[in-house]
Image 1 (tube, rainbow, N blue to C red):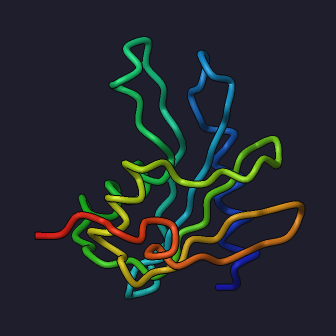
Image 2 (image 1 turned 45 degrees about the vertical axis):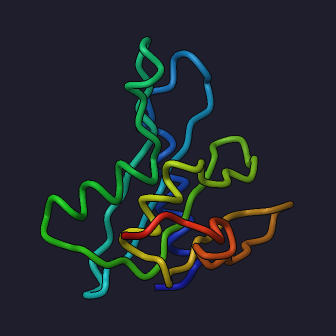
Image 3 (image 1 turned 30 degrees about the horizontal axis):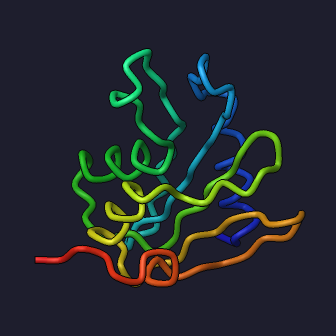
Length: 125
């Protein structure tokens, strides 16, 4: 699957986001080692700490289905804003795809980052 195809799947997930507070609709799509694709969207809550980002929704869905390593994840915002992953999402990515790639759209072009570029000193045991 190309980066564009994966990003387009992530973008389609923005339609499923629940973001009544921020109105910032984000979708994510990831590929596991065996080629399975898992998707997610952000899900907000009036108690902001209970909110879950699109990236973590996709990763947790994949983990709950028995996957523990991911190759690539695309993150898209409905309005074309570059949706860099937050620190919590990056730390979860560090756990399951430390050597993986994050696909984002910057100024209308797809760009790839290594998780280690976005979180150079992630916590490990």
